Image (cartoon, rainbow, N blue to C red; front, side, top):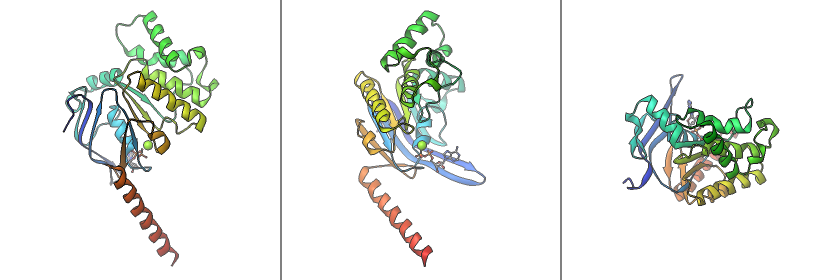
Length: 251
Ligand code: ADP
Ligand code: MG
């Protein structure tokens, strides 16, 4: 059942990649709702489909099966132009590798998503960039370039860029993956603050400590959403299978 106030509603989502005649079932039968104001984490072993799911959530990729509604708009039925508009307006994306543009200053990086918006004056853009950078504690680095910042600072700027257009949801794919634990914790504290202030967040992480920051935890294994006990059991079974394989290879 889809919750009536679901911001995101996915039903039976599948994703199959075809490469060199090999089929990879990256996602199968994924049901997921995210309500407005929720902070959800997605975790599970490497290769289980977390990034694929987040890319579909963020309209960076399309599923090969199932249905997906964002703000009650069925995204499979709409034009590419409309998808691009929703992606730009409703979704803020934060990546593991920050993905800032090296030739642009902090200010210009954060301003970038706004340049695709109609009807904003230069002064309005400047105010929005300024306030997004204030929210992440980086307003004192407007003129710096990404290479002049620490990893933790770059990720803060990337969060500001994701927030500047006031999206409905912030999606973060392993946002702490390239950071040491001090900077990782600082980025987690920042996401927590944004959630307290009303942002809807969906974060992928393989680190259980960071998953605990979320209000609700979703677990995945082999392309499916599973509960925590099932994940533990499947992991143990896989470990045993691998152990047996290694033992056979030794004989
Ligand atoms: P995770 O983020 O959980 O580590 P991914 O979503 O990146 O996992 O990948 C899930 C599965 O889909 C993996 O088996 C991966 O190799 C495969 N996969 C991901 N992207 C592609 C692609 N563009 N083409 C082919 N296979 C892919
Ligand atoms: Mg991934």
